[in-house]
Image (cartoon, rainbow, N blue to C red):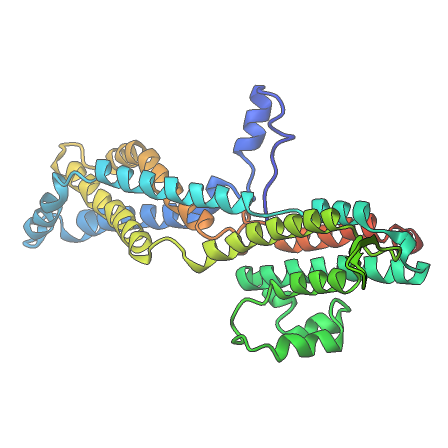
Amino acid sequence: MTVNYSLDAATASAWAVIVVIFKWKGSLWKLIWRETLGWTILMAVLYSVYVYGLKGTEHEQYYKTLFDLTKDVPMDGTLMFLISYMIFNCLTRWLETFRCLGWPENVALMFKQHFHKEAFTRHEQKLINQTVARYLTVFYILLFRDVSSDVRDMFPTFDDMADSGILTPDEVHVLKSSRLDHHSPHYWIPIDWIVTLIRTRYEPTHFINKHGQRVRNRKMGIMTEMEYLKFINELNKLRGKLGDVLSYDWVPLPLALFQSLTIFCYGVLIVNCFQMQARIITSNTSGLSEMFVECMSTLPLSMIHLAYLRISQVIVNPFGSDDDDFETQYLIDRHIHVLNEILCPEETKKRR
């Protein structure tokens, strides 16, 4: 998943730069080695076909004509413009998606701060805290199931979530009996459960008695009116931010843009192979040394094109299984631990 090299790049020393450059996981080399190898093999095959098969034969002229057709095709500038445009859009979406990954600490801490424990027994306090922590966890899991293949593999169905203890059988029945389509997002339902849990235990601070007088309510509820409003607003902020994650997944970049860039980039690399053959053939020193020089002079630019293309392919969907995709499984485990630490510290200590 996400490759962290911050510690290796903590200093700008030459050794630190070398260590970062030659990392393999999530690196440039891992992304483009197949395409670079294929490009090199294609160039060697074209050269070998000409030198060892067609040179000095009647078909040599046709082969040269084929190379001459591609000799003056200027496509590097256009390709770099398209790649830059694609990279800009992909990086913008990647950053915006990352900013939408809300954290549950604010909601959990606000609930812990506003929760009036005096209104409930110790067992009820424990049960309410555990339920809120579990519903927030379910909220994240249901959302990531819709955008991440890794989380979908962890919990293919609601029954799998029940088997792991995240959902109860009754809650699974509620999710299944929803009027929503099976493929529709269900991530917001646990938020509704939290609101219902608080609302059913809410008591207004004042009420109107039978004489029409505004009287203070002696019965304490789970929160005051202002605390309830603040908590619901914070809960809605979290739901809104993570809902935007689903929107980015639902509406990707136009497929035609992605296809045109990929086809054009690979097409340019193939044309470059023919252009190099034309330069080698027309030179008076046609040989392996000339091919090596042409290869080394063209390879860096080809690697840049391939690198930017592959980077855009990696970050266009940050919830996949690439090395630099978001670690959704880690996020779920982390949120479970943090929520239990905030809302259920006693249970966490027992497990230790």
